[in-house]
Length: 121
Image (tube, rainbow, N blue to C red; front, side):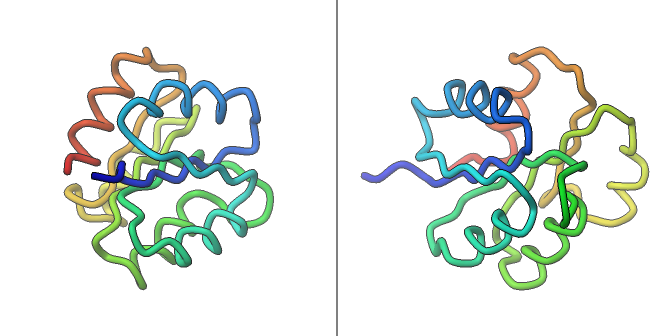
């Protein structure tokens, strides 16, 4: 059985690699360095399970990425991360069963728990 696909979008290469290493045992990982690349890849991957994205990225930010992807792929689950707590804003914009929010910095165990909850098979 193939692994579910998770797209990681962050302009910080080291964070992308860290998140990928954490998730690779259970998921096939696709990386994107910016929002436009992430949107293009997300819409082209029919088996995409979820997206892990930073809010602040060059060009298209993580919130707009989530809006764009969910408009065309409502089955995709998204975890948005930011150093600024915008939890209330995210909750107003998105259904909680589709989008979760994590405030940076966070423990890797916290990320794993949210990933398990949001990207469950």
